[in-house]
Image (cartoon, one colour):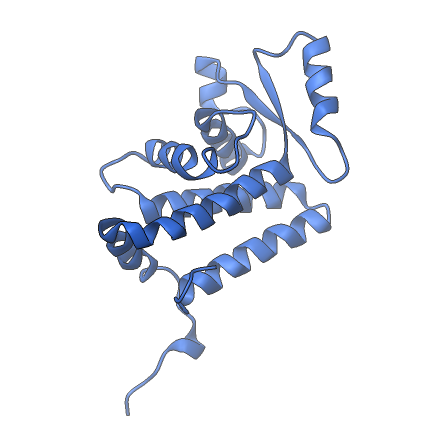
Length: 181
């Protein structure tokens, strides 16, 4: 995943993406969403500014790295609202959707078609309230966003330095640690 970098970051994200794939294969849909949104959160932290609020950092990363490489039918704000809803309540409703009218994400999983959800939303007159999305599209956008972000590190020494400092704080593995005697 990270070119010429054999470290805990690679291991952590390999395990995260493998766990997401496993959840989706087994029909463990809420855990898959939780892992996807957590992954986006951590990537936005690796790339973001500590002075930015979590939501701003999340939306910036989604706009810059996910939506530019793999556009989705929703906005970064709608993804952030979905993240808040899933991580806090395991529902589609967040404070943003309830209080400011941000559309809620309605998910298709497995062999279900996003288009079928879109038609149902339109026929029932709910286009202003809901947006249909297949979870595989979010995951593809996330994966492509990771690759685009990591590729950008070579052209931005400042971004690379921040990434390396933060990645070094992520979980370490005991088999990777050496002890002095």
